[in-house]
Amino acid sequence: MRANPKDVNTGVYYIDGDVASGYGALAAGCKFVAGYPITPSTEAAEAFARIAPKAGAMFIQMEDELGSIAAVVGASWAGVKSMTITSGPGYSLMMETIGFGAMLETPFVLLNIQRGGPSTGVPTKTGQADMMQSRWGSHGDYELIALSPDSPQELFDYTIKAFNLAERYRCPVMIMSDECVGHMTEKVVIPPADEIEIEPRRFYAGPKDKYLPFKPDEDLIPKMAKAGDGYNLYISGLTHDERGYPAENGGCQSVYTKRLVDKIRLNKDKIIELKEEGLEDAEVVVISYGISSRVAVRGIEMAREEGIRVGSLRLVTVWPFPDERIAELAKKVKAFVVPEINYGQIAFEVERCSHGMANVILVPHGGAGVHHPDDIYNAIEYARRLEGRVEGVIEQKTRLERLVFEERIKLSE
Image 1 (spheres, helix red, strand yellow):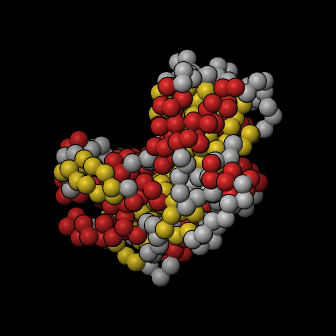
Image 2: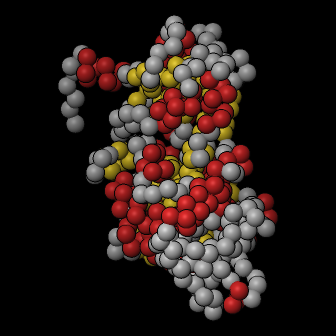
Image 3: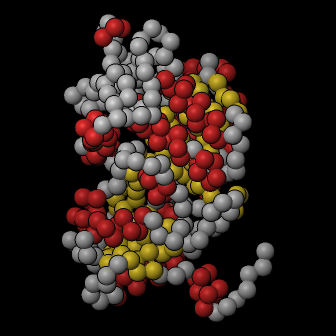
């Protein structure tokens, strides 16, 4: 189906990524956002709050992040598309309820504008160190989906896609952006409503007394019903049967959690989106995501000017991870270069999927800033010169780290 014209602010804008995501949420049919102000994500909530009333939507500022995500889960079960917005410490507070949402197969979207940490860290500056948390932050076995936009336009576009995926697979979907993309101001084109594809919620339409809230269709995904409409809904974080009734035994635990995993893993080919460029004859491939993919562009250009055959693989979808594609490339290339604003998260996934067939060079950055293109160029050039296979992930220090740790230059505030 197509978007509702009342939800879409069609036009050409010069806005930052946070605001673009707020506009994207409304265009996707989101009618409820609950959140608590936290830098650097607050502008997204403010943008949604400004435009929500005209479309019959609501923003509510909760007492904290715990209440925010609980309200989002409740609103989703009440039948509306819902989202929460946060960063850093707020994301950590939401982890238990993310697992609760996964267990209840609750479709909702979480926008995380990442900043440097741990703890309070650098609230106003960028980071990419929540990537593994987005996959494994809550306890237990479950699968969810995480996207990583690299521009304000993509924050608009992929917020809509996040809602569509949440509805299609009845699961939480994370938008793992970062402060640079969130606060970057660029041209954003919002198309007419009839050009925006929206995934409707799959509601149950049979007899109310026959409804089983966790009985899957052939695609492993159950249909939903609205709380308060007269359906027998038993909603619990305990392992449950198709009725939702607690079933604390090994058989039900195995069957139920396997379905939570399989409904994503068996659809990986439909979910994963990658941006590939120059891979046909590449000897080195740069794997990046978020703001690091923007910086990598110049580093790749510099390497090509020197005659190095280097390609780019950008992870738009980070979870589920593109294991098979990386394993396929590892058979053909000499090395992968992975720039991240952390001290190694996705790089270790790349190394796992490479099965020792290609070297993996991590270009880490501690946060509060981005890589210099020279850092990425130097890593590419090193990867090309490296002879033989090196076990594990190789760390290539940035210029800043060499100045601080090797030349002992002191930093002032």
